Image: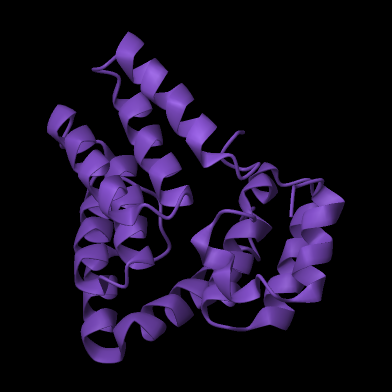
Length: 191
């Protein structure tokens, strides 16, 4: 919560305290990486996710979040590698590891984002897909109108993930958009 309220130092202090109490907890170790990512301390986040994976190399969500930290740094080769590992360990995703690797080789990172979006939209026709996730794809692709449409849907559906829009790098392209700023206000997040 402290992270979503743009209070990264307090969030880091709390997670470090939790880590002191339970240094072998893989979830606490992973969340420490998440908070570092939210604070835009990507190099430290990558180190922390790697420490988490030393505790459990098969912790799929640690691979997924390490992939996101690499994405944030523009290190797409490494992001794909970690995505593939998380997929192999059972993380649910509309694209198989082989599809992602082939698509990345052929169309680069924008192609991966576009196909991921397409598959999530297709999936959303038959099963629930968090609107926040779809909004993030649109935002990363620079498609602000569509991102706002899906953020509005997330708001109406009370998607709990909305508390992270102020710190999620997925929405960095949206920060100066007045509609996005209004959404942050409606959610009650500090600007």
